[in-house]
Length: 349
Image: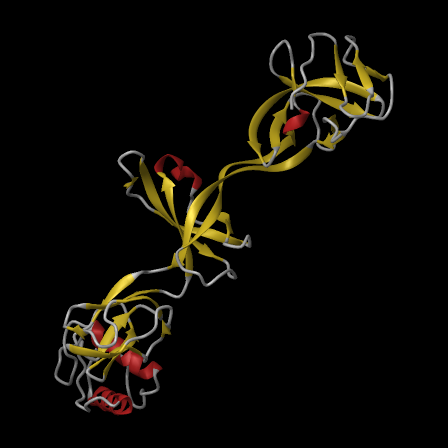
């Protein structure tokens, strides 16, 4: 709400109260001609933050398809939403489990005694050790007799053929525990080597935002954000990654260019997947500035803006320069302004 002032002298009526404050032309001094006193707000010093809300989708990190080297009829598959951890079956084919082990190198060859040294051997040995099959086992790149013994013990406990060799029919390496998003090969379906059996993701909650490319500057890696979840709960989050490649989205009638933004959550919230959320991003921040409520601004007839400084029964107009807006406040600067000063605002009445 802006109250126009005449050049040199003006009258401001405080809504609802009936009090009229006459601003004289001699230095902007005022005298009270009625009651009650006008409503005021305080000039504050601090950071002024402007925000913008954008749409996002609640999901899980690291979505990917899972292939195995097994062929035959699927005799067991996990339920959608199930969490699978190291050493547990991802699926069973012809009654044989295909087990999840942790690692970043895919299972691309058969591992057994006599195989050449490699990172995949170290990866297998690290998992055997973590699962409790590490007696006498050295976790390195060499497949030794101790490795063979650990593999055989592990196979026996799983009900697999005890061969001492491991291949893609028995094991899938993924970086971490996974949550099942989709079952591509349900129980009773025939699958083949190299065919996807599951779509999985990590267990960590993320919010994905297709952010308008023109607003990319609002999403800075490491920046804090607020996320409103379904049901109204608000949780804090942090921008984890911002895409560097723009994508064409939308429709022919309403095209859009966006970048991918991933936001990690501090905790709490819902277990829903693909749920719509609202993300509040910081569009601008001004540090250590003076600010007043926007409604404290006066539009001056000679141009620009001012505020009405209130000191007891005395009032004077102080011209100001405006800056950033945010949270219902506006940055102001000018001679005669100081933190703690009271300025007039329209009353709530």
